[in-house]
Image 1 (cartoon, rainbow over the protein chains, first blue to last red):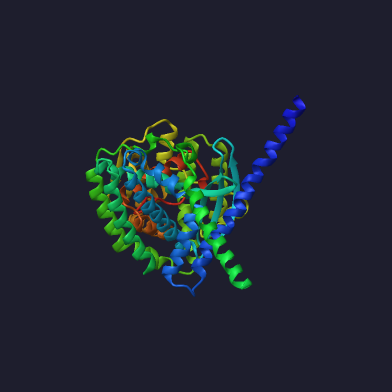
Image 2: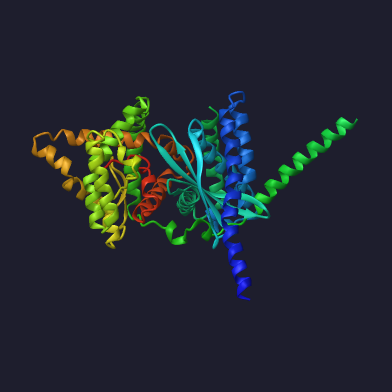
Length: 200
Length: 261
């Protein structure tokens, strides 16, 4: 029996780094898609953003993150408002990430470390972005779902995008008595403003 | 005919594939554990919020008009010059970093930082170059705010200081202690060269701001509540600094963040 435990333990130890490496390889390819879109000068800014938005929509757990960010306000809202919010939030997420990656597109990056959090079943992949005078660490939090990986957070120099969004949205919801419909209106305006800055 | 069939199959596969991928993305659920956060962390004690927001607005305007354009201009300087200035300023901070490491009983870090200071001041020509990094003596940062936190002093309420940016009661106390105990500033004032202090503070602010131009713009351009986003970023950054998570990788705080040095 103890032999079986040993085998199980060895398997567990050998699988954990494998999961992290697999996630790291997958992530490297997705980041390349986004950064290559910035380097491709042949496409228009609108097409470039559409390409990045598609990639983010496929590879980020946008709905799960969106629900997490607004907490109780989501569950108490009508279905139609919820659906509208998820669409707006996904756009908001894409705009945030596109804006951030735009700044990094001319810099060199390398995936320097990856680890697997066995407890929460989440991989953490560290990316170092280097310029001549500065370096910054970005950690991607990646979750496996049905044999595919999905990004659930982006941590830039120890500041989590999702925690920041949660805090920001909570602050906004407090002002509007937790009304998700009103938040949708605010989000729509913000998305329009962010979009015009990205494409101009 | 075969080609048209192939095309239809390819288009079908691509579209179905894309739709399935997006559908799958929607099925991923998330919990607080995934993000290592709790509901309590969303609640930052900010009893002066209205007043803080007014100061924040002032700082933001000052940043847009003065600090950001200067920082962007600074980024156009040759890289070795930027690195030299950055290294020199960082080396001037070292005596206080070492003192705080000592106060936090970080024996190994204190020795390493002392070694770093000696190597960079001598071989690195008054800190203009960073040979210590190449021999494994990496930069670490500790301040009085972090020291007070490790002694068990709580955050206190959140406060936005004019020009100096986001802070809290404990870190503001730390900032004051830095201002009155910095040996380089004390020496300059004693020698009748007090003008060095504001010059040093200003260059330091520009150097730090130049390193986070993209991050601040991304946050500023895409936030539904920029004030709340910066407040949250401040607390996350400080939490990581106090717990010494990847200390050498920490970046300066967003928006105007100037320290007495």
